[in-house]
Amino acid sequence: MDVPKIVSGGQSGAERAALDWAIARNLPYGGRCPHGRTADDGTIPATYVLTEAPGADYLEVAEWNTRDSDGSVIFTVATVVSDNFKKTVQFGLKRKKPLLHLSKTGTSSAPDEMLRSFVARHRIKVLNVAGSRTSEEPEIESFVRDTLEKAWPSPLHSAPAIHHLRAAQGWLELGNPVEAEHELERLEGSLRAYPEVLELRWHIHAGARNWSACLELATNLLTLDSTRTEAWIHRSFALHELKRTQEAFDYLLPAADKFPGVWTIPYNLACYCAQLGRLGDSRMWLNKALAIDESTVKRSAKEDPDLKPLWETTGGDG
Image 1 (tube, rainbow, N blue to C red):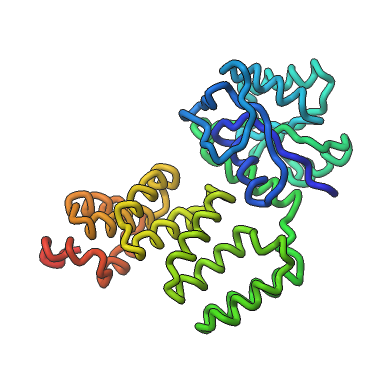
Image 2 (image 1 turned 90 degrees about the vertical axis):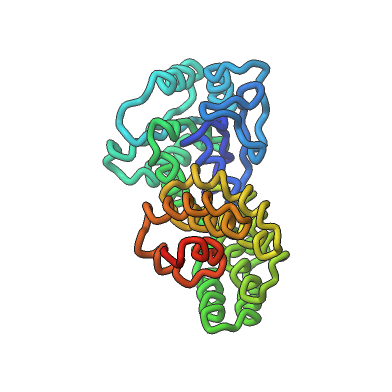
């Protein structure tokens, strides 16, 4: 079954998660967004190529996206649909467009199978995605991405692709980046731009200390999938190794709020601050990392040369 084009209004949560999935898979996507790219959490990032509506009324945008699609799916974690999404239901009924509601807690059947069946039954070529905001239901993004990925699995999940990826990983673990790169080159051309492949290539070039290539790969990875924590971390790590530590800090800082449960982010920010001579900030970020995973952070920090300036002022007390 062909994967439908994904459209949404670019708001946080379900809408952006669907766009991120389409971008990461190099699939067609689009949709209308409010004028000025206004969003529930500020401004819709420029990463998303959307058409601005004449006005900033989100309900007007929702109606247009419903009108311009062949059908709509509303994602929520809870079974209750908010008033905004009841409007989407009304827009669909008004224009006689098919509508599906998928709830993480209330859907009895597998949501991916329900979505795939819905799209096939109604011959949907353009699918409008709406749903909860991140501030309302933090789990919504992963629910949307998982459902879409299970409904239309990546070509990287085919047997030949899995073989080459596993072989590349094996060569990399054996310390042979040349053979690892050769395995990735055996992938079908279109698959080489997938995030999983870029991630492996980043590690290959990191092993060779080719940090300029690492920076380019991490930047491309972020463009494809801004929800991958590794991409944020890899980009700043490459910048730091290129002696561009202030940039490394500046680029990683937004990720601290975006991924609050990932200890590596505040830990690396602590390292960058230590190297920049901002020892108070370094201690603050290190404490944040410790609060997330104390044992792992203590093991990592003990011998980390980037934190040496901090230990020199505290007598080695980590």
